[in-house]
Length: 276
Image 1 (cartoon, rainbow, N blue to C red):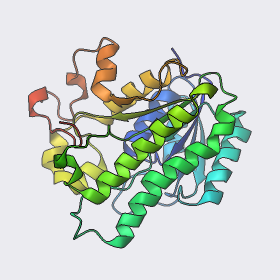
Image 2 (cartoon, rainbow, N blue to C red):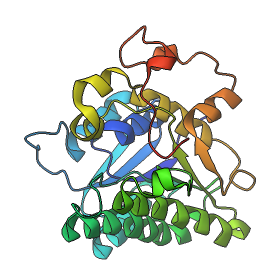
Image 3 (tube, rainbow, N blue to C red):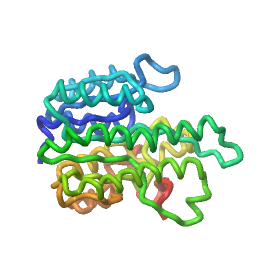
Image 4 (cartoon, helix red, strand yellow):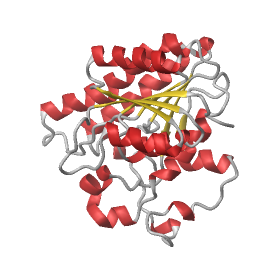
């Protein structure tokens, strides 16, 4: 399996999981078009869409950095047209852009609620929908959203209702597209990890260095995404996939190399949210 010559349109991706997935695909010689807002460096966050593009090229891929906002319909249209025009089509859409706020309902501002809905749910729908006419022309078209399975237990529904709605919304959009465009041969799946991933969001929102040390690296997410994107679209769609399950199906039984702190046993890793 190889993603050589395949074109990926990704929302976000300047850093973290999105960038890790892009670099994994770039090692095959894939083309990566990134729609992201990070035109200039952030004082607290590493990386811009331009530094990500440089890293993709260094890894062996072709990069097209597109400065824009997944909340803006014109930016989405421009991203699809630029990606297809630059690389001759689009094979894969990755809905990576996401806003996180774990505030309880009475503490969550209306502005942040709207932002999560606009980026996570609406952005996933609009970017995927805009790319569908181009994806229909691809040989093995995939939509992959980085969102969790729909777990309707009160533990997760009530933990952070605003964020839960936004992430479950991403999943519902993706599963809906899977059903709607199955006859067109477009796969649409979601992917979520069993443990926290060492990213800026985890460090800043979930528990700082303690949780970072008990997390896995973004490479495990990238390896699982790579596996999913290489599978036959016509028969591998409409699933809420778990990172570790995907890799285990590929024969991976030892995940120790993915520990953010080498030597950390699996039972000491911090479990991610939404999974029982």
